Image 1 (spheres, rainbow, N blue to C red):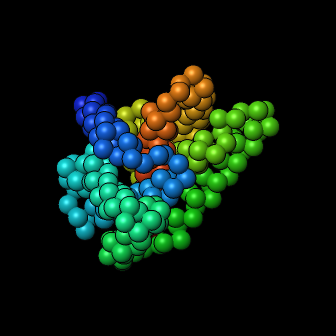
Image 2 (cartoon, rainbow, N blue to C red; image 1 turned 90 degrees about the vertical axis):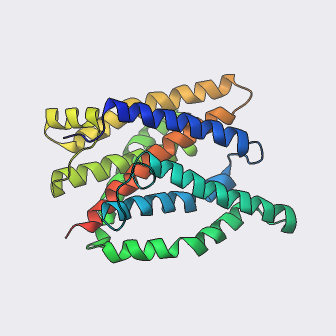
Length: 254
């Protein structure tokens, strides 16, 4: 049975809006969303996923305030914000690109959490199953689309597509082959209706492709692209976060 209720979705959406407002006011006035920023996202994404997985494994208690949705997003943003602010200070003083400092700080602070997670894994190589499926699904969609002139599936669009195909793949393998359950209401309805989590692929594409297309049309009409990149960033994280979690969950079962 689905875990999340309509009230949970409203609460998560409200928190997402607050995070957007906070980042727009206190971070994106000093940092552009570019390749460097995408690299700077690596430590906070790994941190948030690792904490979430440790909660799934029973190492940490499951708390909506910090270890599971929606609190885990706030914790990940807080961790990343602190790293970026420290890195900006280093950039001003020593003229080193801030994203390099973020990666260094992440390398210093993440190992204790990663070691705990590795200790919980029963079959680490099982992560490769959804990873390979996601890569194949991404190519199967992106190559024909690019040949047909779909420019919205290049660069960041391709990254977003892969993130959501990883989410679909982790869900498919986990439910169809390991007996996992679906936590989201709409996804659970269609999985029960069709009898397989394979339905997650067309469901994802039916929503994702029009959204990416409309985002590119929006970008063409707007002079300030900050919100465009913020929305794309949110869509990417909302695919990659659950995708990595679903895929890594496979490694925790015997």
